[in-house]
Image (cartoon, rainbow, N blue to C red; front, side, top):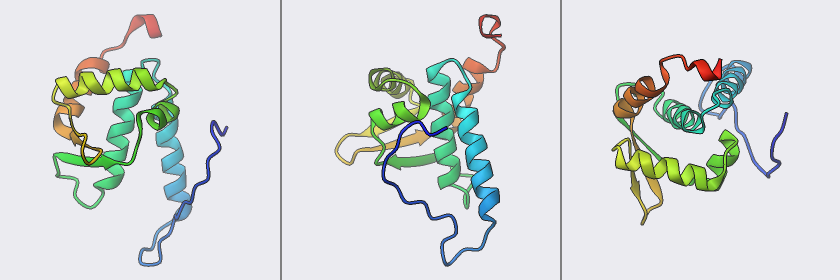
Length: 132
């Protein structure tokens, strides 16, 4: 199902890299499906940020931080099936919890990956009976 139609370009196999396009696409679709499943919008947001960090840090999995730029609150909301105000509220909370650092001048967000994963486990590892 396509939720929003926007002009885009996807390059699955850059000229200088070899790889299996189907494997990449299947994994990406499965990861996006996993992001959409939680009922809690904060959980969906954290999963999205960790997925973006994972795809950006494939070569260096030992890094504790990742930088994201060019992704508006509105676009994040579209991706996780939420609203822009909800995304803004969650990102503000995450900033107060030192899970992310936002640089307004450069419009970038630095993810503190270790803290983000720890908070994800703390908040969402336990089964929530009201959701099952």
